[in-house]
Image (cartoon, rainbow, N blue to C red; front, side, top):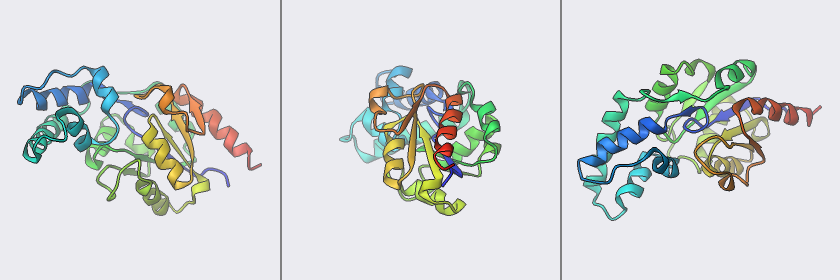
Length: 219
């Protein structure tokens, strides 16, 4: 079957949010005297959602109260500074316009309300039928549950669905759901994390070539 539904990761795939996330983390962490993070360090840790990110930074042994306090400080700051420095990657908007005939969804490990607001502020929300965040379903990527939810909502089969993302979590979730997986190499993960993907692309515009390849398989 030809593709009908295209699933996209958000951070590191559609939008570079690394500096705003880093600034919010540093705001939250400085209260407890933790070292200042660089953007490069943040990029290495992003991908599993804010709760897991904070656990990585302050240690699983930190008490739950401190973890929750850091998370709340992060969220309060981040909501106010969501798009201070975040930018849409080159080629995203014109490519989304060229694939208007496909149904599209965002599947992010960022919370749903923040994902929706980020897309809205950057004029991307209009391109997607649904937005699924880390709290939309009981599990987040690399679980396939958000993908299964998206397919059920739209009414498509795995063989009609593709997922595009910049991390091994996107690839793993896609594989578990039985999808073709496409990894973008310009995002937050080095290529060696992406070797399990069915296809690799170096720019967002390259997904047009992938869609042609896959569609021609069914001619």
